[in-house]
Length: 268
Ligand code: NAD
Image 1 (cartoon, protein in one colour):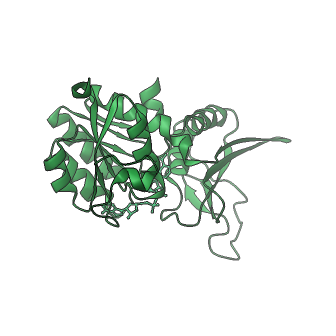
Image 2: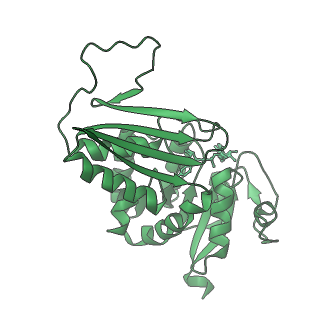
């Protein structure tokens, strides 16, 4: 049976998300962890770091070398926006399918990766949020925007997050923007007494980012109408909320060609 397992390298495997992902892969009967890469750790057994127990798979700081040695089918990357481009191009060079949770990736990169994946006739997945509840929040928000087009997004994350606004907030705004006309919100003459008070502007929608210790990943989408408001809220209270989505993507990516952007496009 070992031969039929999907061979996975986890990149950023010593990070908050990466450790959870490595543990998930180790516990999934259809996946096999064949490599763990992190710039912060070398030659340590990944099972020790994740609390799984010894596995014989040692951390490496070298992605290309790990690909050559372990011949993986899939790379799962949870690193950071500054290194993700290099990691994906390395994966593409070696014919390894990228499953990317790292956020803050520009649209142009997604388009470029899609083109290369199609040429190579292999799949890739990029999802700003792998939690099913968050995907439903985005879908419901897009639906609500048809009837209540005045909307603001507040996202709340732990204070070690590098990118703002979150990938989930941007994706939510993109999905809402498909359902409503561009419109300015608030008073036409409103004035920010402190720069940034009204948040970021996405096609007239305001996005506010809160960064505090104690949070994992949370978002509220607030709609305002005549005499009423509607709030759609999702909370990831533990990083395991993302794991079923990550494991599903690592399996489904084997059957697709080109890039799928967003978990919602894998489940419907
Ligand atoms: P983290 O800082 O805890 O972990 C990142 C890890 O990547 C670190 O261990 C770091 O040493 C490693 N790293 C950095 N550069 C590297 C490189 N060049 N090669 C190999 N390893 C490298 O961060 P985190 O909280 O685990 O988040 C990681 C990413 O995942 C962020 O972009 C975050 O926004 C995103 N995220 C996505 C989802 C989702 O569902 N898609 C959920 C949570 C977080």
